[in-house]
Length: 188
Ligand code: GLN
Image (cartoon, rainbow, N blue to C red; front, side, top):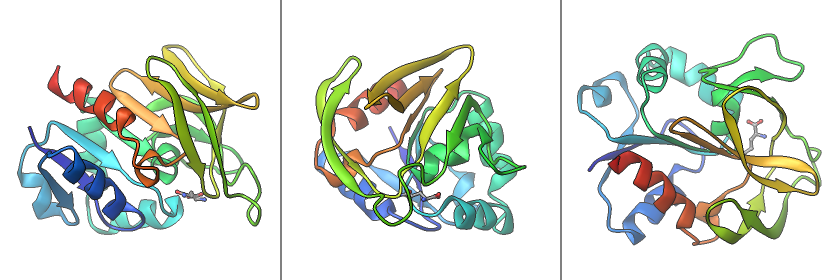
């Protein structure tokens, strides 16, 4: 099994550490040539969605990756990655991959005091640590989206087909159960 990790900007190294801990091989996706290999699943890390979106286009990664995702590639997306997958982004005219029918609010907890840590239930997994960093949350889900977790009334984890999108960063807490759930989707 081989996982691709989008490595154009943001917190991709932390996901690499997670896969190292799980003894799973991965390859970084940095340029178009990296898409010549085949992947069983892709991780979209946290970072800055506007920068990632711009780089995806500039590096000509956007169209082929969107095609893969639309065709059912398993995806684990954290934070900015969730924004890249959302069909609708509040107060923004355009979206990015737009492959999950949800609406997200960027920097939903505020820009300055936006980082916090909690523990909460995640469907099918149990109580997990959750670190939020200038995180988005989901303000609307549409048909076919399962809600995996809500924190204080806000949706922070969803699954749509084989795409898992999280507001928080499990890779920072060294709790890899969500990575394992994603790897299970990749094996199917
Ligand atoms: N605030 C960032 C954005 O809007 C996301 C933050 C993160 O990925 N930790 O893209």
